[in-house]
Amino acid sequence: MTDIAELVRRNADFLAETYPTGPSLTINPTGNMMVIGCVDPRVDPAHVLGIGHGEAAVIRNVGGRITPATLRTLKMLRKVGEANPDGKAAGPWNLVILHHTNCGMTDLAPFEDPAGSPPARLPRLRTRVRRGHRNRRGRHPAHRLNRTRTGQATRTGAPGRHRHDRTVMCDTTHASVHDAALSAPRPVLGSAVDPITLQPVDEVRVTVLMDNTFDALLVGDGHTTRTGFGQAATPAGQFESGQTAVGLLAEHGFSALVTVRRGDQETTLMFDAGVSPSGIIANADRLGIRLDGLRGVVLSHGHFDHAGGLGGLAGRLGGSRMPMIVHPYACTRRRIQDARSTFDLPTLSKNALNGEGFEVIERTQPSLLVDGSVLITGEVDRTTDFEHGMPAPHQAWHGAGWQHDPHVIDDQALVVHLKDRGLVVLTGCGHAGVINIVRHAQRLTGVTALHALLGGFHLSGPAFEPVIAPTVAALSDIAPHLIAPGHCTGWRAQHALAEALPEAWVAGSSGTTYRLTRT
Image (cartoon, rainbow, N blue to C red):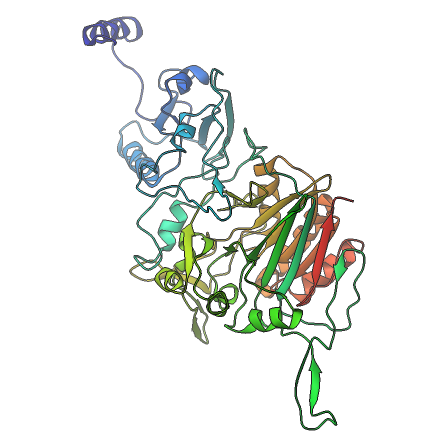
């Protein structure tokens, strides 16, 4: 233990050697720099970065995280600096986020969360939730640093992130835009220091139970199976037989079954549930698909056109405790308001979902399911300069009023690593931006190859038309083997993607099954 008297002696030496004629520094950092770092005693920012006296203001907390408390401190420091007689430092500022490997936060994984929320457990899925780096005992921490101009804080290190406000939960207090902004992803540059180990699989099958379109004339190929007419019959007195053949339903919504195979073991999850209570059940019946073999449900986000069929699914499952992964902000009240009308989006209820038989598990961080072979991204880092999110009419309730909600912070994607081929990424709407999502998945897993990208890209409508060209350009650079846009992608983006990636692009349709194998 360091003796207090020794500290007093050191302080006297410091004053005598450093300030022999009295302090001459100002309260504003001479280097126009703010550093946010970890409290770990091995990574003192002054030593790691060689910061001189008065060069930077330093904030340290567990993990070097940007939390609501950190933001409040930054705001207070700005006011203090503005009020100080020496004036405000001129020129741009650098905000430095200093993270490191072998972080002690990893040791928290086996314990209950200090904020009061226990780690998620999905025994039926053998889920493992990642919290920060794997702890490498005996190694010195590696320091990684990026810096940007003020307002563009750059974070390096582990992909996991804490939820900062544990009080904003479904059916307790609705998440506000302000709360969502405080926990919003920060940009991340480069690869994760310690990528998540996503176990490769031998086969992935994605069956689209519901999409915006159904085309019975589409023709399949080696990895695509289409559904035509004749899947079911319905009474129709105008025909000689008294009935007619029908295909599948299509509606403004999305739902898919994802089956992964490793060796001779298969596991199926449902990703989203469409917009109507009966749509996915009707299509599953017409396709001859039994749903009692599902091992879990993943909700991409809280919008009603991805969750409307959960009631019908619960009825089909008969009240069994089906695990469902969802972001806690999925229950946020939202609306679409413009000069002509207001549409209140149906809001999810955690209590109702639990009452219908789902075991609702709220996660903001990446989660591994199915023996580590399926990754749910959790919150997605927003890193592109062209994917700006939802336009102004999309609003969320923040407790005292409505505010623009561009981020849809609950948006998450499902990721599988197909052995020898690359990542398979499935999006619901892609509100985080499909390029952000792909890059986030690549960064989390350390796998750079993208084999397939499927789901909604949310490029429909005038507000998103400027996003189409840079999205197409970025996807052309990534060069996936298969790209199957659906749902909210929009016809303009579909045409642009089909033209730019003719060998990879495939038209979406309800009832389509994509079978992806390592050969």
